[in-house]
Image 1 (cartoon, rainbow, N blue to C red):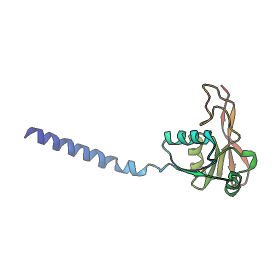
Image 2 (cartoon, rainbow, N blue to C red):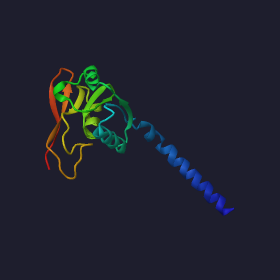
Image 3 (spheres, one colour):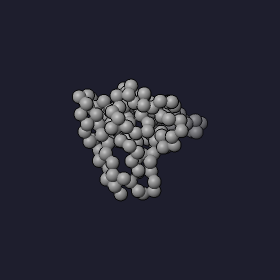
Length: 154
């Protein structure tokens, strides 16, 4: 009989904890990104794995014409890279770290962020401890570019 009451107490406590945390669980943002990429690119797959490791649900779109995708999404040629993500209607071009993706979603003045080229050491482009210096560039609604993050070489 005593064992049953212990089980009941554990159930009641567990229920209280779940109910107490339910509002917190419901308030958590849904992390989802569409990624458009060439099916033959290995670093794109590595960037997708990086996003998934950081809690993103990735919808993977294999594309035959990435130039067309970038043009449709408004990615300027000078900010181009190998793959293009879309979060809340905003573009994420190239090997952008999750910190700048989060910043993009918070900022109403930006229409996208980019890691131009394929910087060594950026997410999906890791090579040991080496990292080239690179910047994450934000594109504003007015078309101005601004540095939103600066990663030094190491």
